[in-house]
Amino acid sequence: MSFAREASRAIRSTLVLWVIVAIIYPLAMIAIGQIVFPFQANGSLLQNSTGQVVGSALIGQPFSSDRYFNSRPSTTSYSTADPKKDDAGVLRTGVSGASNLAPSNPALMERIKGKDDPDASKKVEGDFNRLKTAGVQPTGDLVYTSGSSLDPHITPEAAIAQIARVAKARGVQPTQLETLISQNTDGRFLGIFGEPGVNVLKLNLALDKIKG
Image 1: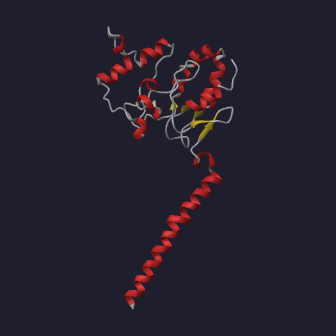
Image 2: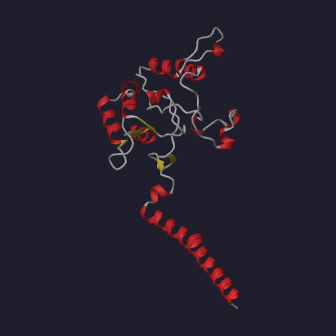
Image 3: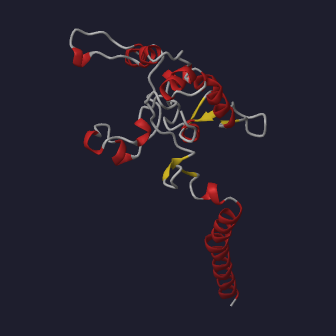
């Protein structure tokens, strides 16, 4: 009888704990998230001026047009590979991460500095030269990828370095862009952790709202 009682008690305890941790707790967290933090709980999705969802504030996007502030490079193209040209299998695997190339690796130096070659198909412009040609003073985060290659932020310095190019392309005053950068700069967490960063997608959405 003692064994049967202990077994019954163990089974009841297991069922009670299962209901608490597998049903009640998850549902409570979902409810709290939807009520208190609905924006974050639903993926921090951002919409354009027409109400269309264009991305998440948590994941970067590639921007290369002179009319927009450019993101930092990504070894995974921010997981937006062309389905017809997905040689790296980004869309199939959903991988993210840095290239893990050492600072002295010729492949990394080639991507940043470029490579001259008589064969035009083998010539590489390089991120450094591309930025200089566009009139942008390269900063570290504009030529190096982030650890995840999905970072949505650039440094305020990297954004400021692009002001002249964007202002010229859009026909707006640089002071307007300086204000936008300031408004879309995230400060340090709790005022002490991390470094300030500019969310590129948020900045470009705000940019589309001003008239040039």
